[in-house]
Length: 168
Image 1 (cartoon, rainbow, N blue to C red):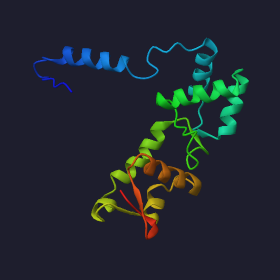
Image 2: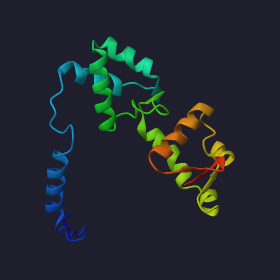
Image 3: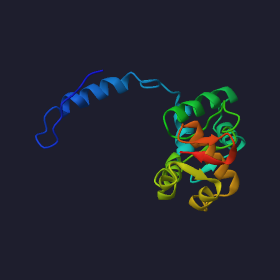
Image 4: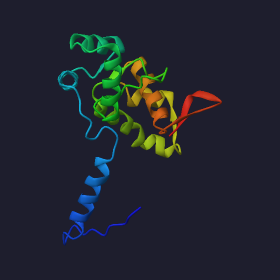
């Protein structure tokens, strides 16, 4: 690991840091990967959707409409997940029931829990009742999905003796 001294007031060190970040980002998976033209069109079609989420069946229909094979569709959706364009955990039996097209929507809901003064006052304990209040704009299946996402991201853990309480 390298250390960089940067001053926002003097503007020193910023170009070295930016150059290093660009070099490291270029090494990330999928960077510089050449996509077939019809994959790019399909990715753009998915990104242009207004829905917050789809079922895997609905996503597959979009991929088929764009003439992608099932295998191509699985690869493309995995890549879009890795790039952060969508959240789709294809290999996770708890999370593979929904394809989230707006990851920021999930982030906003998870932030409600992380910023909750009630959770803080309870030393990180999140009750199911409080969660329902924080996520009252979500139906029960989405609440369960989002809670599973929190667990997947290691933001919360269900307490063994009570499935109605999580530690955040």
